[in-house]
Every structure is written in structure tokens, then in C-alpha cells.
Image (cartoon, rainbow, N blue to C red; front, side, top):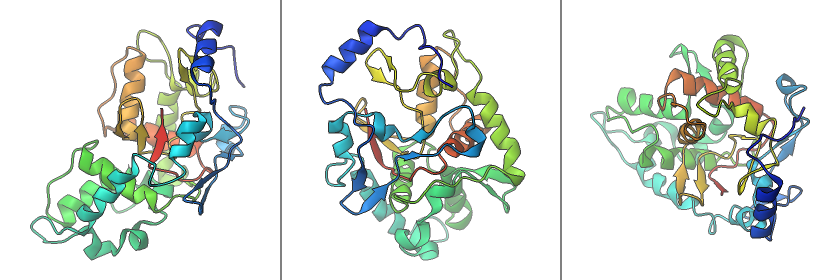
Length: 286
């Protein structure tokens, strides 16, 4: 159930934002990438969100028509070049084992299609919930004998963009039962916890005030199905934990560490809120 807008949102600032963006968002537009990949941008809310949201919407539906158009063609998508750069890394042998990703997984289309749709997930052999980044670094250190990549460094973000790109159009289907449940509950608690001097939670913006404006920023439902995301604001591809950092900083709070159990739990919970939407990364946002 939506509540009254947060106090910092004013009619005046919303009006300015609308006037500044003459081509406002089209929430009912269809997202078809390269005239062939149909993306589900609106879906019934998962059962675990009953009473919280009437439906779920991709962040793409909240963007201006110009921004929406950038994601509809890989030649126009400024984030897609990062995915293409990762192909060389995929095929390059590294480390003491002299192996590449392709040696174990074949082409990225063969080995990674469907992966982005189910992560984060409980990995039985590791006895923990893992993100794609965690799994990549496990492969690098334990199978390739190579150095870890920085969790939100360029190499890692490029590779996660490549892995996401081959699952575009597939529905997000993150498991939250069984051994993953405890981590999911922890992530849910963090999502509804107020942080920082502004005393705000994730839910205050993305559940209670989506479709409102906070200054010139049009608030979305905060779905993660489009990550990694190219943001026009900072002209680079952004990892999800980087965005978590930014959100908590915006509350004037102290973020958890990138790759920390807290952010992994939050990622699992946020991903589950988008179950039913299509994978669409690398996406384009403001």
C-alpha cells in the first residue's frame, strides 16, 4: 500500500522535473531489444510481496522515452560495449592452471544462459548463498589459479554484464526457500531498516514512493533485474553493490562493505522482489 510522499518530495520540484523532461516516461511501452528479445517489464507481484505492491515494474518503465530507446538496441546501449569487452577475458587462459572460462563452460551463450536469472543462490558445495561475483572469483582462484578480481572493479562488472546479456528475456526466478531462507530473511530485515541521518529505508523510496519525484529523480521500484546498469548520471556501468552503497550514502549513513554478508543478503531479497520480470542487463538508467 502506497503512503503519502516523503517530505523532501514537493509539488514544485516534481513540476520542474516534468517540465525538464518533455519526453516523460512511458510506463506502458514495450521493451523489445534488437527487435527480437521481448522483455517482461511489468508482472504480478510475487506471493511474498502480497500487500506491499500491486504489481512489479522494471526500472525501465520509469525512464524517459529517450533513455528507454537507448536500451532497445545494443548499438545504442552505452553499457553493451562493456559486455563485448569481457568476451576476450572469457576466452583468455589465466593463472597457474592455464585455463580460461571457455575451457570449462564453452561459449558464454552455452555455459551462462539462465545463470543471471537464478542468482544469488544457495550453492550446496560452498554451503552459502553466493552472488555471481562470488562465483566468478571462486572459479578464478580455485579452478584457474588466478587472482581475484575486485568485487565492483571494471573486469568484474564487464564480465557480469556479459553473463547477464545472454539471459535477457528470461524471467528472474531466485529461490528463497530451503537453506537460502535465513539469508533472505536477513536481507528483508535490512531492506526495511532505516539508515543514516535521514532515517530512511529502501522501502521508503522504492515501495512507498515509487513513481514520485525526489528533486529531479523519478523513483522506481528499485528492481535489480537490469543490473549491471549503465547510468547516464555517472557515464559508466554500475554494479548492484555499488548502487547499494550510493543509496545508503544518500541517507547519510555508513554503507556495509561491498561483497559483505549484509549486502549479499540484501541482494538476494531485492532480486526476489523482481521474480517474474525479465533479465535485462546491461540496462540503461538515468
